[in-house]
Image 1 (cartoon, rainbow, N blue to C red):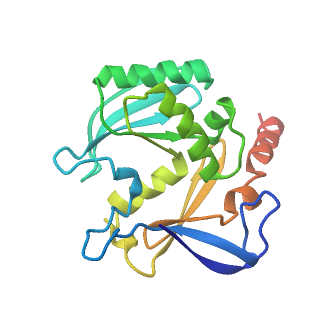
Image 2 (image 1 turned 120 degrees about the vertical axis):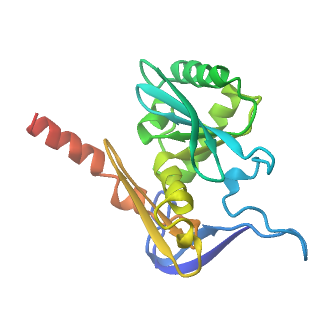
Length: 225
């Protein structure tokens, strides 16, 4: 289930929320379905990974390349990897590249895909909301590899979960009272906040505060080639 708490700041015009009056910041959590039952995994992306074979195929989709690796989800270790080039991140090129990676490993299990905002735009998804990009691009990728369970995240979010689970703190940041912000900086800037290991949604960080990063960077690159 998803629980939420209230802060004091207005919701943005795009509905993504901010730090102001009556906005609601959702914190994604999972709980057991009945008394005495085991709780579902906190990291919902790994629900489809079984205990006997805790591997998944991770695919990173970028503007001109697609990289993939089989991952041990218990340790975060890379087992095997491959990559391929694409001309641009349009639906045809992305589908061909993703299928090539899946076929290369003859993979039938869980697939985790990370995307950039530039890739999302190339696929026709233009929202500033990470949740919307996860959903919309994820639905497209599911049609490209229908035989697999597919989980899609913007790469900032995926990097955050990876750091929380396998980084220097080795899981300690998932405990109570830990508030963690992850920021990725490249051609675009993205940010995700985690509370006790769970992503906080509708903070407005990306739609309100980081939305001008790309045009400002482009202006600087044009001024200082």
